[in-house]
Figure (cartoon, rainbow, N blue to C red):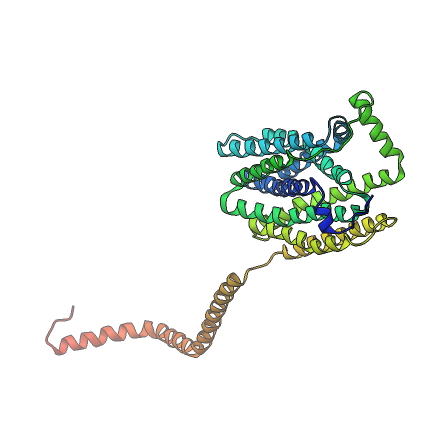
Length: 386
């Protein structure tokens, strides 16, 4: 048997792998768009971060609870058809939300119900696609296949939020949801031609298989640690995913496009690292890389939220500050000028008040004298005295 050269070119030459990668990237871009659009949609339509948080929670938690059953279904019925099923359900659900929103017939409970139904099928594609890679790729090329898989998340995290934010800002959330539904439908069409090399297994009842799989994860130290650590890390990411749009839209004065660009920048920063990590062997050091990535993510989230909280402190924008300064200077100048005029006019006012008092004091004597003077004048003029 000829050994396959572990290169990216040889990896992409494997039968069925380009189609798998194309459908995976389309679906993940649609998933990133959906996550952000639902948050922006809830904030815009209902004005409630609580609704946005509930929708995000229901888009993840029901599928997480049902993931053991999804794994058993993938083993029983193959991966390709269930992956296509999830992509189709996502496209129909997004289109339904958009149409109901345009008709103004989408109350909060109905939105949450549709999101929950979409969540139940999500593990079928999320798990099914990732388990197809080791089935289609030789073991010597697993590191590069893992890099392609990881880079699919990076590409979707760059283009998905940026496209979602721009669509919401310019056309509104319903139009953005319709575009996302179209991308999900395209992913389903591309995945229709995937070759499913899996061996379908069935060892009994569906729930029994799901319980045995869950028990195996719980008993295995490495798998148990992965399940707990990744789940807790995803909780932190979910909180940040809600907090950042709320801060930008409600506190920092940004719009939906700005939110999308921030999440896109988050994806850009990891793209080069993911490609470089494809050339590094992680065998035996997986736990170190995972722990380092989680700690780095926690530090980045803390810095971002601290800066946002600092920028949220009461402040006055520059133009308003200049207007206030001019008004304050005018008011102070008028008060100072008034005081100066009052001090300059003080001696004059005192003289006027003194003259007025003298006139008031001489008024009792001046009145009889005035009458005598008037009588004398009339006598001289020949007029009888009245």
